[in-house]
Image 1: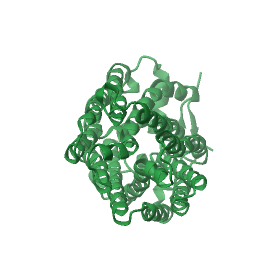
Image 2 (image 1 turned 90 degrees about the vertical axis):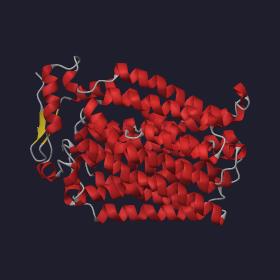
Image 3 (image 1 turned 180 degrees about the horizontal axis):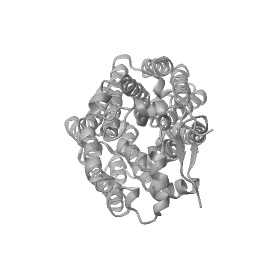
Image 4 (image 1 turned 30 degrees about the vertical axis):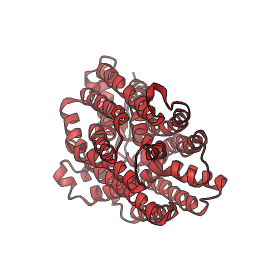
Length: 442
């Protein structure tokens, strides 16, 4: 008979490894595909920027504002969205999110003015609100803390793939689809990104399962093992977590985590929305080549997440892993500014940005469960993500304005590198003791 493993020093319990493997194979692949389209929906606007600007008047500042309006809609509806997910279950709520945002994204084909661009980007963000933090909350009800690093590393391969596959595909579409169906090529980027989400919504409705307690493919003993592993926490971490949102909002640990996510998102949106612009400024005009080079940061991110996720679970010190990721991200942005006109070192620096920022994502999402628990988890994680998404408002608008004023993106890259430096300092010196605990089995 299989027995529950434990670590007396840390107070951590683990179910048999093959149980985790079976759970992951059951739920993670579908979530990966959904997350891939969610992130492609975020970054596709960067691929079509130049083509949209040739279809109707759209300044860099207006582009940045439209990109930010997506985030504003996301922020406004994120906490209500996660509250609804907690109340009615992930299956129905994820299906609703996928279908509505897929239809809204496909409707970008009707945009022919700045006003329409603003309105639809806000609607898309509102429809997608809560999806990514909802996934992390959902996985937290299936996967115990000591398994989350590698699970998130695998899951976030979808984010990397959204760029690795999406960038060259967008370049191909922009090169060969002009006039197909009487539409400009950039319309097809949104159609081929949005409509599959509607299909995914239907699949999620019939395939995803809300709670491990209700599934027939786990035995009673396996459910007992999993229940114990999910409830086990290091004593100090368990006693320091906020059990209500009002308590969390007064917790220094919660506020520091939210601040760190805000700073991280400034860097992330700098990569997601502006890498094609950086590549074009380096003298590359061929759309296929721009798409191929834009995929490189995401490819580096994919490799880094795979390697670092497992290492982070073995080491257990999420703070130092995250710090290293943000150091790499800052160096990458700094190098991108220095080598703006030298293609080979520029590409290497963009690869470092991708490796740093995407791996920081996977490491970061192991932190919120250490500061919020119980009924506060869904809303608390959503609030943290909302604060982070404010970086998605600041970053695109600020970068767009800097380009319009200076005629160059280089000053903005220096600014983002500085933000990464601030994030490193906060992580090193302001993280409370509860966030420095190693939660893995030795």
